[in-house]
Image (cartoon, rainbow, N blue to C red; front, side):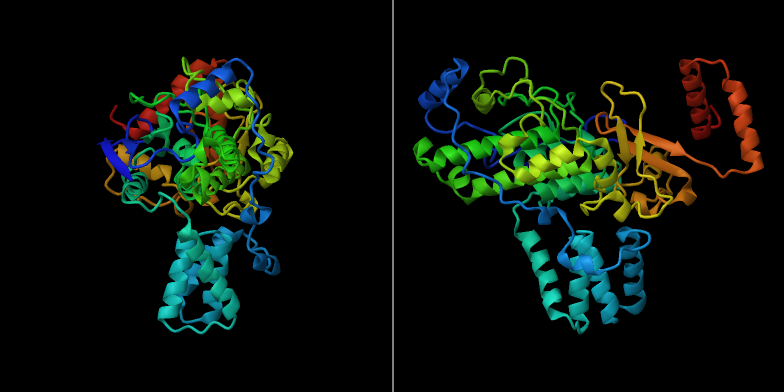
Amino acid sequence: SYYLLQYQYSNRNKASCYYLRWGDYSSRCTGLRMGKKSRSSKKSKAANNGHSRVPLVSDINSNLSASSFTPPSFAAELPQPAEGWARELRKLEKELRDTHYQDAAIVLSAAKAARIMRQFDVLEKILTKAESKGVEIEDQKLWAQLNEDVAALKRVKTSVRSDSMKQIINGVMKEGMNVDKVAFEDSTFIGMNCLQFAATRGDVQLMEQFIKMGAALDFEASEMPYFSGIVQKPKECTALLLAVNGAITTRNVMSVVARGGMGGMGGRFGGGEARETYEGCVECAIQLVRLGADTSVTFQFPPGCENHPIYQTWHVWKLEGKSVRDVASLVGSDLFEKTVEEFSKMEHQIEHVNCRCGSRLPWKLCHAGKPTDPYYLADKNDEKGVSKVKWRYSPLAPCHCSTSHSRLGDPAETKKIHFKCCWDETAHREYYQCDKTSEIRVMARMANTPFHREALNSMNKIMQGKSEEEISKYMENAQQMMNDPEV
C-alpha cells in the first residue's frame, strides 16, 4: 500500500507533485537483501575480488510469447479500418449510444474493437451494459472469451487500481499535475519517477497507464528528492534499464533458490510471486522498446554505491558500462533479444513503434490511421541529451491546450484528452514529446492561403540575418503578447 507524504499542485513546467512511500513489504524484484548477513558479505567480497561463480540460470527463461504483444486472433479476420482502430472504436461507441446498446451486431463490433485496442475498461462497460439489456449475441464462444480477457486482466497483481494511484490519475487528468514529476520511494531505490517505479516492480498495467497519461519514456528525473536510508538508483537510468535490471536480478535469485541456495527461500523470491515479478519486468522491458525507449542507455553505479548489496548482480554479470543492447541475452527472453535487435534499426522503429494509448498497435493502425496523421519528428542533428526521434504526444493524455488555459486562469478549460480535442488536422497543432527531457514541442500549421503566404514572407524578411538567440527571443516576446496583450 502507499503512504501519502506530500501533495503540491503543479503544472507541467513546475517541479514537485506527489511524493509516495511504498510501505508494507519490500521490493519484489531488484533487492538482494536476503539470506544471512555473513553470506551476503562473503558474496559481495567474492564479487569484488573477481572470483564469484556466475550463476547457472539457463533453465530460468521467460514464458512470454509474441501473442502478448499482438492483437487477438479474431482481428486477422476483420478488415483494417480505413482511418485506424482508434477512430473505428470512437465511431462504434457513438453508434452504441444512438442504438441504446440494443443492436447485437454493433455491440459485438464495438466489443471486438475495444479488445483489439486493449481498452479493457471500455470493453467491460460494453459487456456489462449489453448483458443488462438482454442483448443476444450469436457468437457465444467469442463473447465468453471477451469476458475472460477482462477477468484475466483483473487477476494480475497491480497497483493501478489502488486508492492512492487513483488520486494520482485524477490529479494528472483533471488537475494539471505533471505525470513526470511524481516521485516515488520504495525499499529498493529512491528518487524514482512514476515510470521507473512501475518498471522496477514489473507492474505492466501501471506502467502503461502512466504512458497513456503522457509520461516520457527515457526521462531520468535526477532532480527528484532523495530520502535517507535507501540506496540511490543507478546513475542516469531510465525505466527500461530498471526493468532489465529487475528481470536479470530476479532471474538470478530464482536460479539460486531453485538450487537450494538462500536456505531454500520461498515466498516472493522462491515461489510463484518471483516468477510473476520476473515476467512483469520482461514484459515491461519489451513494451518499452516497442514504444521507442532508448536501448543504448548504460548501467552506471551511483556515486559511492559500488559495493552496496543491492548492486551485487552488477558485479556478478559485469554490467557496469554495458548498454541494454549488450545485456539483452541475460534477460532470458528470446523475444526481448529479437525486439531489441529489430527496434535498434531506425527504419523498423519508425514503421512499427507502438502508439502510446496502450493498444500495442503501430501508430498507423491505431490513433494515426489517417494518411494526414503525423506521429513523429526526426531531428537531423544528434544533439546530446535530446531524443533524436520525438514521438507524438499520447492521444489519451490531457490535451495541452487545456493545461495552457488552466495556467492562464481560463475558467473554460476543457480537460479533454488530446485525441478528442486538438488531435485532428483541423486544429493545426501537433504535440511531440522528447522522451529524454519530457519537454513538449508544438508544431503549428496553417492553411495555405494568399494571406498566410504574405504573412510568412513578411516574417522571413524580419528574421533574415538574425541569430538563433535573437529569433528565439523574438518568438518568446510574441508568445507573451499572445498570452497577455496588456504586457
